[in-house]
Image (cartoon, rainbow, N blue to C red; front, side):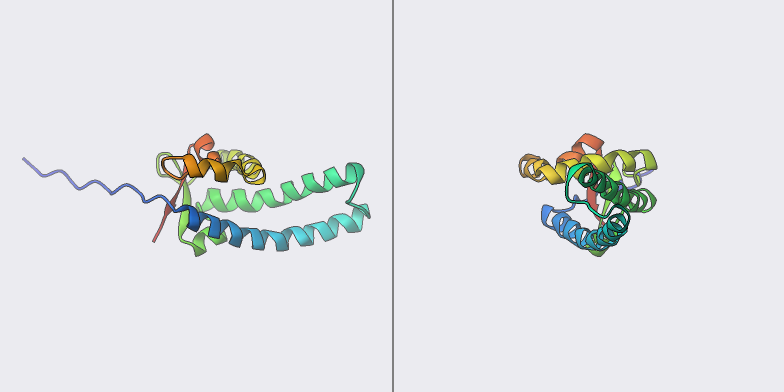
Length: 144
């Protein structure tokens, strides 16, 4: 009887602290991108502080930030902040999220982060996962 090949050990889920550190790092980089995008918007619209232009500006920033996050997560499973902190996002089978999943995860994650619900959820979750990971069937793991 031949011995069975060893199974790959299950991935180690990223700690909440490591995930938050990567989010802060990505947030700082994103601030620079959104600052430049806001300058372009204000140069065209003249005002982004009241009325419909304020809402249009917010939508514009959401749309500007999306491709960066979606591209990074669907191409390598990592944003620059995630690479720095050695974490990666993957689907429930352990694969890099496909484009469809990355596009779905982006607005769910933004809503969860802005409302604070994702962070609160992670305090109660048995695996310390954020709510948007549970809703999207993704997980964030440590990588070497």
